[in-house]
Image 1 (cartoon, rainbow, N blue to C red):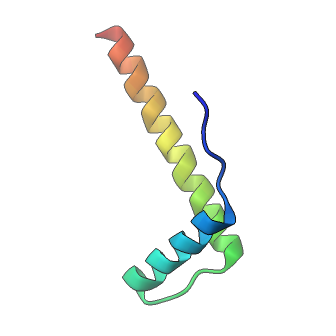
Image 2 (tube, one colour; image 1 turned 60 degrees about the vertical axis):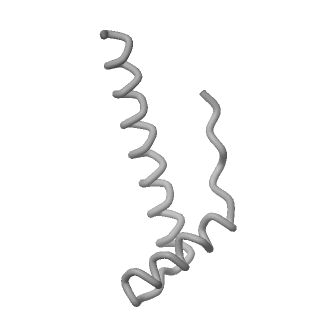
Length: 56
């Protein structure tokens, strides 16, 4: 499965959402790290779901 790479526009959107929700900003470095962790979590969950569907 192909994944769309994280782009700077995604980081800006993450920073905007984070600022709105938590009333504090994120640095680009922290936003990139958070984005990568979020994508890795999504990939893990997707993989587990696909494995579970294969067994069913």
